[in-house]
Amino acid sequence: MVALGRATEDVLRQGLDLLSKLTGAGFTARIPGPYHASIGQHYRHVIDHFLCLESGLASGHIDYDNRERNPRLETDLDFARASTERLIRVFHQYGPDGLDRACLVTYSLEYGDATPVRLPSIIARELAFCIGHAVHHYAIVRLLCDSAGIDVVPEFGIAPSTLKHRGEQRESQDLR
Image (cartoon, rainbow, N blue to C red; front, side):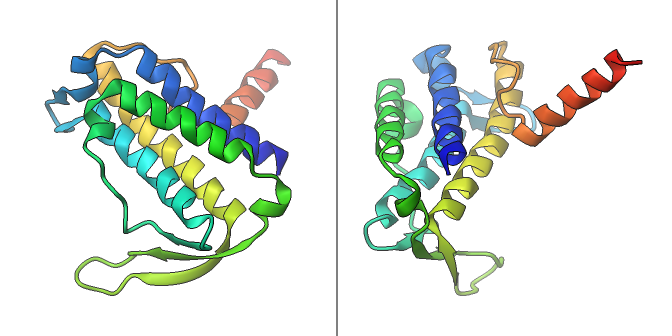
């Protein structure tokens, strides 16, 4: 569970690092081409999921469909930064006992007018979901940054398992 806490902080700090490299215009500009989205929109989507998890911690019910979708998170760099820093503090205070708690998750899985499903889970699993979800959206953000000429750290938007695999591949090639 300690690793989960570190991973949560790492992924949120990667977001803070990204925000530190952006201007307000760079955060909100819609990137043309196949993307038609802004870095801010994707970043807001990532933070929305962590916020849903946070709001469900007390009740034990996490509703990912009921995201706030606050436009300030995608248009105001300072607000996005402050929200991210607050989430780091919130999740930093959860120890193994809190992460092992059972919860109920509501999430739409089908297209159309299907009713969202309610699934049993635990807080740790949902935190892992939010981390993985963030990494995958960061991969999209990485493409947007590349398109806009914004440099990001090499591991941004790359799954930890992929980074590990690449390291193992390099080590095995070095031994040859």
